[in-house]
Image 1: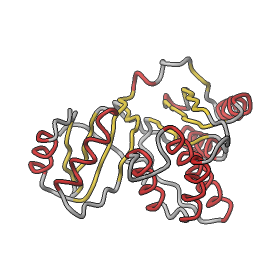
Image 2: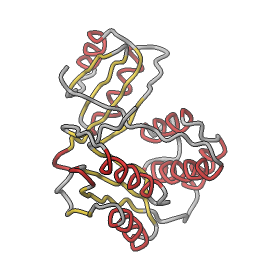
Image 3: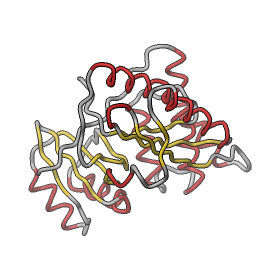
Length: 240
């Protein structure tokens, strides 16, 4: 369909420390999704999609249940979303989404990661303009026409449907995420979504080599090590 979409490489969580980081990340996201809606996945499409994603990433059931139960109670943490944009090595662009209960700590950690890796933070809006903010749903299949018909019947304002190498990917405005997801599940019984999220997709990718690539990968590593960082979007086509 013309849009080149490279799925972001997921980290492989091997050590207990890495698993703890993964569980902490999902714990915060689940808490916020439940707190901002209702703490019931059946009645909260955003929470339901996040629960399914967490399970695919092998997050323990008790971690998921604890985060939702915490949101159902009174009080709790006061997390707030923070977004930072920056220019990385070799002309790379990055968007860093965080959930934090201490913005001073978060900006300090993120700034340090950029400063130590030949990179710098940018003004809000200077990087996101090079990305498309879209709901992305992908699954194994090849019947593109059936998917388009399902979206049309449900009156979903789809931006694009891409079919490549046995995988169909739907791109839609963020506000259409829940409606597109529901339409897919109803049209294709037993469907297993490999990706279901709202993401920033770069309008074009770049390739880094040598020192630029090494520095960029170090920057990503340092950002991932920040407890408050939830998602990192960038325009670099990483080696497989």
